[in-house]
Length: 271
Image (tube, rainbow, N blue to C red; front, side, top):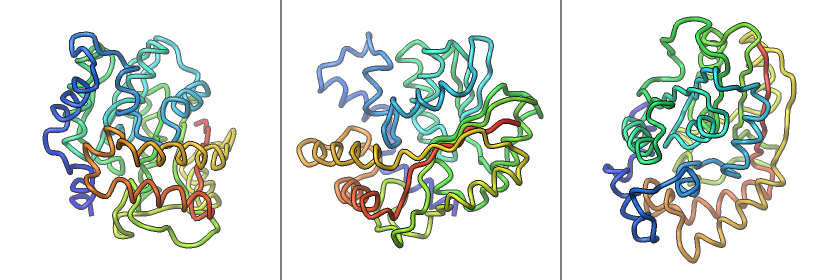
């Protein structure tokens, strides 16, 4: 299963090189890149930077905070937290190609001293207990069957009173998911929870749920705009590591949201 997930997110083996070449082609100066230049590429979740900041604003961050990002991907959310709040972030991801690209992209924007990335399994965390002030995960658990292990690990890693912030795609009431989608080409690596199951999983892991925010309607509007753009010029991230299926993935995502087959929901939890 883990190898299938790695393959899904590794369509482009030299990911950082591919991204840099596309940035240069778009007129960007490689010596003067900013996180804003990277945002259309590296914040690969629904609603992008806006969703990252909505989540981060609830995480009680300051420059002394140490944050763990589970399923950090290309590192965009980690870099946003480091730049906006001044905190230190450790990102982990199952896919080596994403970790390598994330580290390289942090060098591009001068954040290598604030963010680090490790190849690791979110269901088998090996950090010291109570070593992070906050933990977040954005669009990672859709590929993880053992969410109980993931959330239990987050609880162990978090200091007492710390915030665990989750933003994920969940199973909706409108029927089975239509594939391919950005996180899976078929159901074999897709493991969506319902909102009710998410509440149970988080509480069973020891968290108190402070807030639950359903952003599905906003997500549909965002993806409709993204799909229209994709028909003209595919987004850099879609082209770079989702391969030739990227347009169909985007179209299916719109239909899945419109038909309530999926929902986007955030959870703000306290240990």
